[in-house]
Each structure stands twice: as structure tokens, then as C-alpha cells.
Length: 470
Image 1 (cartoon, one colour):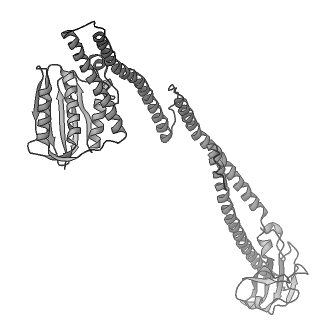
Image 2 (cartoon, rainbow, N blue to C red):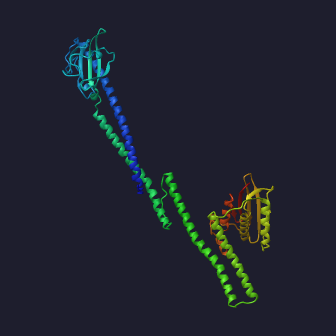
Image 3 (spheres, one colour):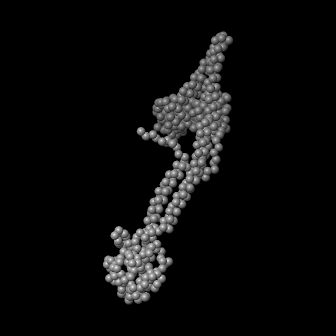
């Protein structure tokens, strides 16, 4: 049975350790490739030097006229001084005749004693690679002809093992120093960059804990040059400000909802207590009972709004979608609403679509939206005009409910669809829970449409219902 390790690792250590491992692997691969390249390049360069040296010795021998010259360093026809070479070792040098018989050599011991290999002498290649000796080591053989009047009278042969030709200590040391320096430099760079990236993330995480504890007074600097980090910090600050506003609004609205529900209960209790105690009687008692019933109806409406809102929030209310004629439906709902109104000072007009439009809606829920908007418009105008217009396009139908009231203040327009929200003026003039617009918007969205504020200014307000066409 395996237990999952949920231990968290700091961002700086997590990224720097993985970057360092990746960097080291990459540098090791580069180092291996570089070492092979250095080795091969060194061998090629030293073979080229050996070719130059053999040719130089052959020319010197020709100039002295002797096939058996002295091989001392610095002597005419002899082996060149070490300062003329870029070789780490002292190669074997043989001077042989055309049959491969060794005439002289710089050292008595070597891969060849008195006789060169026939294949070496007869080969047309000036550079050959052979396996010589008991241990079959690889040797490079470089030869140059000793020619007098275009006649070859002998050969200068230089032999060195591949191991010694490839020996380079200084280059490998420089390569190791460079690889280690790059690893340290890369690790330091990623460490500093990660620390710089981790700092704003840590600040945002700390601020998130602060918000979680209910403290919205956060301080996050907006001086990051990285675009993504700046957007993260700015978005978090904006979200925090929004949460602070909503938290303050929630507290205020809950208090308002409690008050709205408590008021009719208090009124009903007081009125019924007066009737029960015999304080009032006769027609006055009947009036008290009538008022109590009216208050009970208002409270029942508010409770029903709460239940309906919770049901829509939980997607627990099924919609009965039917195909209807939009013009007929709007005209019928507005006509019924006008009949139920007692105020005579409000003029309501309707502009229907030029052609009949068939749409699929839940007629009861659609009526709920439209009646709520008409009631809000009536509260806004008191005495004035309400106009309902129906427009269409190939994709959707639009219903605008316009009034000529004082409009919604700009600072309140962003919150009108928030649950339990009621404007400053409305909360003191009209009773309610502030669920009408938010519930209406949810119903419209459930029917694949939407409800939004089209415009609002001191000359009036327009709400628009949008629904898809059939």
C-alpha cells in the first residue's frame, strides 16, 4: 500500500532544483560532444604538424645529400627543435630506403626496429592508421618521400600512438571550468528569477488567507513589470474590492430583508391583538382584519419570492415551454396588468412587432418577468408614461420596457441584479425583498434568453428582455 506524499515544496527550490538537473544533463551532453570534437580536432591538427615535419626533414636530407644524416635536434637535416612543434609527445622518426630498410631513427626502440612494414612503404597514402605492438594499439604513421631529381631514394616516417596524439590536458581543463561556470551561472540566474516570480505569488497567497479570515484590507504593490504577474495582482485586488463591497451589501441587505419580513408580522400581531382584546369592535374591527389580511398577503408574496428564487438557484424548477404568438402574449399580459392597477395617472402604451412572431416560452414565467418590470416602472414614474415595444431580428426577439422616471443612479446600476439589493430611495418608499430583478434575470436565462438594463438616465430607464426565436 502506497501513501501519497502531499508535502509541498517552495517554488524557488522546486524550479531551481529541476532546472539545475536539466541544465547539468544538458551541459554533460554538450561536454561529451565537445570532448569528442576536441579530441578529433587535436588529432587532425597534430597529424598535419607531423606531415609538415616529415616533409621538412625530407627537404633537409635532400639538401645535405646524405641518406643517413645526424638526427640531433637543431642539426641540419636532423629532427626539428621541440619549440617548433605543438605535440605533447616525442614521436618515433625513421629514415628508410625504398625497400623499407631503416637507415636511422631518433630512438633505438619503437614499433619498427630495422625494417618498416612493406605495406607502409608501398601504400600511396601519406597518413595511415595501423594497429601495432602486442597490445594492438592504434598508431598513426605519416611519411614523406626523399626525392632527388624526381627519384624517390627513401622515406621519412613519423609514428605516434593515437592515445598520445589525443592527449590534451589544457583544453579539457578549460572545458570543465567552462561547463561548471555555466552550470553555476544558470543556476544563479534561475534562482534569482524564481525568487522574483515567487515573491508576488507569496504576497497574493498571504492576501488570500487574509481575505479568507474576513479582512479585506490588503496591500499588494502593482509595480511588477511582468504582464502576467501584474494582471494576477490587479485582478486579485479588484476581486477583493468586489468581495468587500458584496460583503458590506450582504450585511446591509440581510438586515433589510429581516426588517421587511418583521414589519408585516408586527403589524398583523398588533392588529389582531387589538381585535382580540376588544380594543376595537364592529366596522373598525373588520377594517383591522382587512389590513391584517393585506399584510399577510404581502408577507406570503415575499416568502413565495424567496422560495422561487432558491428553487431557480438550485435549478429545481422545470419550465413548460410552449409555442405562442409573441404579440398576442405581450398584449394579453399588459392588458391584465392595466386592469389590476388602481392608479389612473399612469399611461401604458404597447408597440407590437410588425409581423406575428412565434417563440417558445414558459408563459407563466414570462408573465412573471414582464409584470415585475411593469411594477418596477410604475414605482419609478408614479405619474407618467410606460411604453412596451417589441422588436425582432433573424436570431432573437426583444421587448423594451421604458419609463420616464428619474432613472437609476450610476453608482447603483452595477448592483441592480444582485439578490436582495434595493436602491437607496426605493428601500424607503417601497417594501420588498429586492429579489424581483435577480429572479427575473434567472428566469430569462433559464429560457435561453436574458434580461439586462439597456439604459438609464434622468430622463428614464429602459429594461430589455431578449429571447431566442423558434
